Image 1 (tube, rainbow, N blue to C red):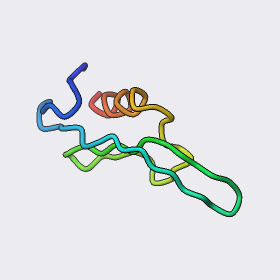
Image 2 (cartoon, rainbow, N blue to C red; image 1 turned 45 degrees about the vertical axis):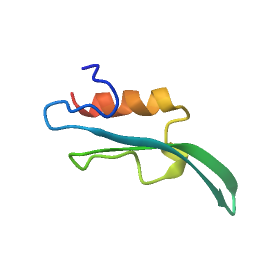
Image 3 (cartoon, rainbow, N blue to C red; image 1 turned 135 degrees about the vertical axis):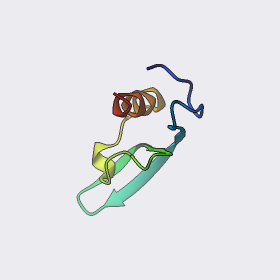
Length: 65
């Protein structure tokens, strides 16, 4: 499914993605967090967030399958 970001897709709407950073004792992290209107979202761990906006949009599309 190749819906445009922010467009409804059978009850699913991409919220974000938004870029965030975090400094933890062991390292600095950055990534793109996405959410869906259905409640699905990127991993709770910033270390596992996509490294680009396009990758975040791709993860969102994958959750539709």
